[in-house]
Length: 264
Length: 127
Image 1 (cartoon, rainbow over the protein chains, first blue to last red):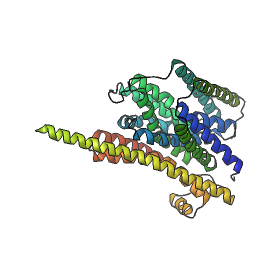
Image 2: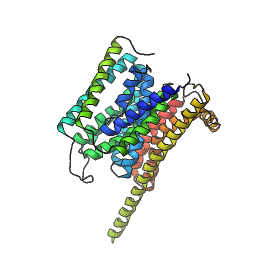
Image 3: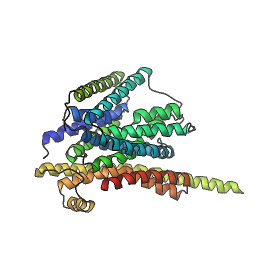
Image 4: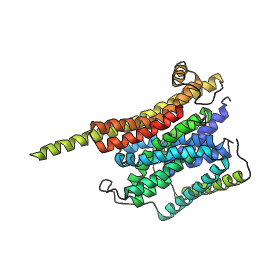
């Protein structure tokens, strides 16, 4: 397999789009990469998930560096919950090795539907606002938080996403963490969570450098552009467009798995 | 008389916490940049030399480093991916060391636990 210019450009553009969308909507690039790679590029789903995990690490490391620098991420809370997310991630990636392409695609479609409806709900309600105070909070319901983080870790390792869709609501609604801190801390945790499962995909030979490297480089560029050039929050129309894309991908993935259209 | 000691200890903890956060943020930033540069270099060389790329995970770490040193495109690309995966692991190591320096036993144990889980995953991957 040799690399062609076209392939390189296409994958890098996919990465830029995913990285940009991730930093704009806060709902990660991981949701975009696996469907596009499987549906448009014909990459086998296990390899697509492995690439997505690597891209999720790229997004997290870049964003978390800034969050930690600005003291927005709660490192102690993050490390505590990481105990659960990394264990979940290892479990999820081992289970993914046992599942068929079709089963994974259907699980992914369920996640896309959930994420799409969350995006719409959040944009209709308006962005969560809480007092500007990022320091005076008390962590509540730690056991529940650990359970939620474990579940987020399993989903991350199984489907190659960051899992912020689960962790942020758990931290914000259950544990009483301010929304901004919850987002920053979730992002901080994603890198090590995804790494824990990425090594397992790597050992199975699912990380294909020719697919992973151009996409990951694109994600770095896209995330950088997203955070430096477009500082405003996305318009409602953009969010609705993203969720429409998520629903569309969900339908296509179910359709393909029922009709056996996935690449081996 | 204990008040000043408490205050001093508090400010020391504060000080090293600040340092720890800067170190963690630095590891994440420079790890990302390094991995992106190495991956991009590998891809550029692969295109330039029109070289085929084998699947990952077939070389030992020593062979990989040696090939990368000789600017082998496949080895460089794979090394870049590995640096990407290792960046968050280095971040955990920095956290372990910082909590040890701060004598924060509880979080030292917690971060060491996270490190053990990731290490387990790496050891599983090597076998």
